[in-house]
Length: 297
Image (cartoon, rainbow, N blue to C red; front, side):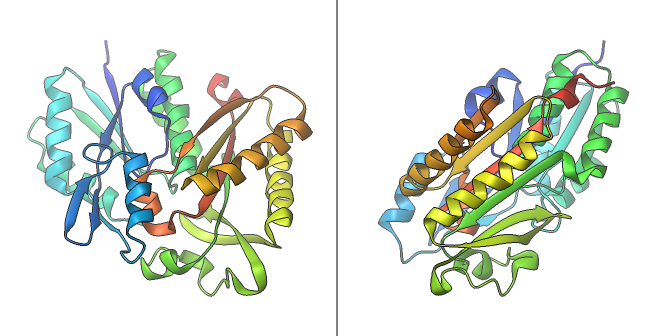
C-alpha cells in the first residue's frame, strides 16, 4: 500500500491544528532580525515574530529559503519513516528559490525507491494553505498517487480555483524585499489610498483599490462575496499580521458572514512570519476556494 507524505514550506499559511491533523510536514525558512537568526515556526512563533517587529520598528526582518541540504534531510527522514511518495508543494518560483532547492535535493537523493514530486504551486500564504489543505483532504480520502497527481495538476493549471485578496498599509516592505511583482509603483498610503492586491501567475498583482478604511472593508467584502457565491461549499481563510489588523480582518469577516447568510467553512489566524517579513505587520488577507472540488472525480 502506498504511503504518501505531504510537504510544504513556511510561506504556507495553514492553521496549526489543521496541519497536525493532516500530518503536513514543513521545510522552514530562516528569519533574520539584524544579527539574530530564527527558524520559522521552530524557534520563533507567529506571536513572538509580530511582537519583535513591534519592539524593533527600525529593523526590517528578512528571510532565507530552505537549502537543498535541508530538503535532503527531510526527504531522507520521510524515507526512513516508510513513505514511498512525497508531494512537495511550495511557494511560487517567482517569489522564492525554494522549489529549486527542493529539486536539487531530489537529484541528490540516493534512495531511489522514494518518489518525490516537487510542485511550483504559484501561490503563497493563505492560498498556498488552501492548496495544501485540498490535496491533504484528497490523500485522506485514500486516493492513489496518480489520482493525487491529477488533482494537483488541476489546481496548478486552473488558476481561478483558489483566489486571494489582501491589503497592506504600506508597500515599503514589499518594495524593499523585492516581492512587489506587478504591483510595482502602486502608491499605497498616498491620499489614504488602500491597495487591494492578489496573486496572479505566481506574482503579486494589483486587483483594486479603495479610499479609506471603511471603503476598503466594503470592497474587500464585496470581492470575496462574489467569489463565494460561485462556490458550492466555500472555504474562507481570514489571515492578518498584527493585532490591529486582526480587528480589521474580523470586521470584514463579520460583514461577509452577514451578507452571505449561509454556512461556510472558516480558517483564520496570523499570517506566517515568512510572509510578514515581506509585507510588514499591517496586512490582512482573504482567500477562498470551493470544497466541492475535493469530492469531484
